[in-house]
Amino acid sequence: MLSFSVAAQQVLRTSYYMQNIAPQLFFDADGRPTSGILFDITHAIADKLDAKLEMLPIPRKRVEQSLIRNIVDMHCVANKKWYKRGDLHWSSVLYSTPDILINNIGMTDISDLAKQKKLKIGTSLGYIYPELVTFIQNGNILPVTSLSPGDSYKMYRKNRIAGFVIPEIEASYLAKEPSDAVISLNENEIRCAFSPSMKRKQVKKINNIILDLKSSGQIDMILSKYNSTRRILAHDDAIAVE
Image: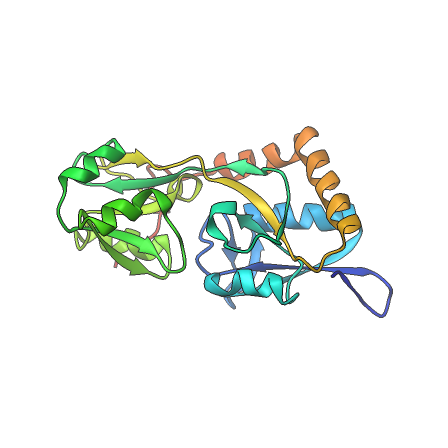
């Protein structure tokens, strides 16, 4: 549940993980988040709630347990397909960002994967890709796991893997090459997941705040803010390949 400080101000605890690369999060030299889509949305929720926001670093695989154990109140880069527990509370959809499979062998449709054999594809630690399960089981894909899509991107540019999976929003910050082809895997509806311990009254209050942020256009403004500075072809500004 929400906690309270000595000044009687609500403290809203939310989580992030280092796989949240730009534009989801930007970090300072000490690894603390300073801006980004997740940063701005969660701070907007806390401001409307008149609460102090605490952003806690939680490993991706421990997010669900952190919600269940009431270590954090909410996590706002969540998809219902990623979690097993049925007792989590959920917000409405914040926005959609399809997972895409960027590859250098010309594949543009998911059915193209069935023609492959042990194709090395970069995936991110702790992420679930339901659309790829059958291809992995059939040996069409050989997953190569990295800590983040940024790490997969570096391997891809060094031709160590034939492709990698990344959310479309995050892919917009990577340098593109004419040889890059894209498969759209899903709609990937992003929501806030809430701790089962959070009182329904609080869940409803935060959900109403989210609906207000959506209807007022504030969430669209946050997305546009980072979309307007994306670096699709700016190789000097994109993730460096060492």
